[in-house]
Length: 186
View 1 (tube, helix red, strand yellow):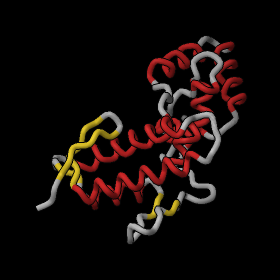
View 2 (tube, rainbow, N blue to C red):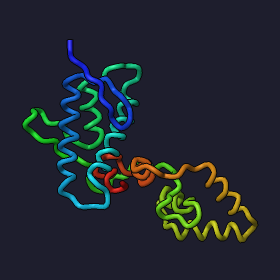
View 3 (cartoon, rainbow, N blue to C red):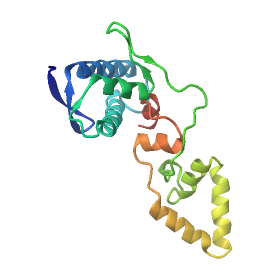
View 4 (cartoon, rainbow, N blue to C red):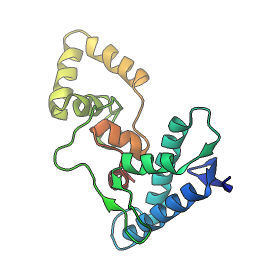
């Protein structure tokens, strides 16, 4: 028999066993401590909140009808985020981020950070890994040649969602949603 506690993580409540809670608490404290020394546009609180939301999303996907989060689930999620879980509490979490030119499958989103009108051309260019100017020229030529470009652009603007969260921006760029990548887009 193990003790459980209820925690709020990324805006969701979870029932978590004692071992899993301690592992997750240490991970988040250590991650926040590593952020405090770095300078950037986002504060450690904002980045930690985004990481908690990502962990919450991964926990929801992993639970599948179970009620209590166990240590194995927390360990798997921390590994999925690119960190090595220490064997003993005295060791630190080591960052085993994806090295080099990792590129996962990119998801199609409208890129609001590089938009001129609606971000459709920027999002398509990012998804197809071509220069955004080339994509804009293609749409301009299609517009001049018979209004097809306008209707295609309008359909994409309506159908394709905008990348709003840091996790969506990671997906748009084909990057894993690790805490360091999330911190880039906060």
